Length: 452
Image 1 (cartoon, rainbow, N blue to C red):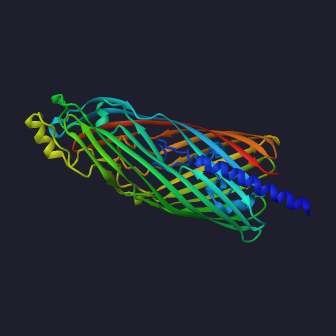
Image 2: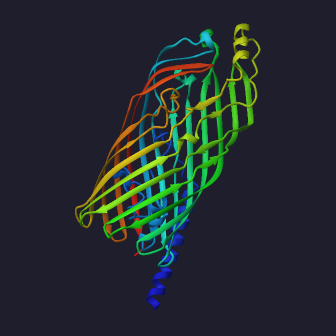
Image 3: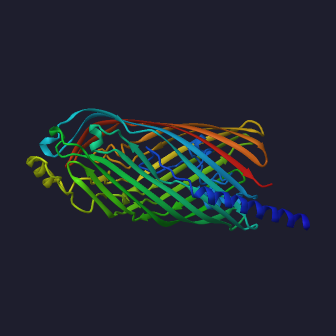
């Protein structure tokens, strides 16, 4: 009796320590990425990176199930935590023609700029059994993110310089064992969003007028929910279904337009609306024997909720003294568009599919491979250099080393192949015509700790 009480007390102390670590990390973890599907991120697990996230809502063999399906928490009989970091090396190489200017003052010239780069996507999950029926989870992830950054000065900079959307999602959850085969889960999402959308502005660059810089930034907290179900058909086969609600952000911030051609304009009451889409995940998992297992996932994301994302100054710019009359007239004709930036409109809902297999070579070593297809919500008409997204295919591989029953480490790698992304954007103060050659490499590591 005393032994059971002692183990229970140790588990509670362990859980409190892990919780304090997680809350500390939550103050510092911020992420953004380029070239996810639309700007949705699936980088919640360094281990799952090895099989392209196949089986995510059904496998439930570590604490990351707190993110993918809270019903899977019931499979974890001891307090468990997972900490991941995923590096993303992206390429968004625009080649074509671009210009800045109003009307006939925009003269297309050859342009070649890469808006890709490197970023890190972190994730943290914890699972704690409360009793034989009720299980608790907590996850800290980045479900949506975008970063593209084009050099300035360049002709592409008139369409975009920095485009950045960062989210941090803190989600407490509960899993309930309804029967030995059926479990359900429910979680809440508290989500922080930070956004920056910048570009260069000049209605008459051929006249030698210095560029102005449009900078828009906004942030917001918003809330949603998630729910899941897991059914164990046999000892070797289970299926999971998970749903994440849409989260409606109404970020507020400031909009600044500065430069010699326009004077200085700053508005501190910028506001917009960004409806991050709901998504549903269905996964299956089957273990053939002690070594081989097969898993698959299908994800439906309701992107059609996003039809327009527009952010810009809420006051009209002033024309600086000494500006030539023809430039002043061009500014007056275009001033409602100056500094306004937009992500592509008319998104379409999408499907994502992945298939993977695990091979347990020894008690210590496990190997993973996977592949997948991910459709883009962006159409050819509305694609821009800010989000030069297109359909992509993935190949993945990974490995796990298990030190003992209490600790293991995973590494996973994915390469993304993208379809050609044609761009034909002609706006009031710029044009970009060409295509973007996209690619990405992702490398993830994950540490798993279990209280025995």
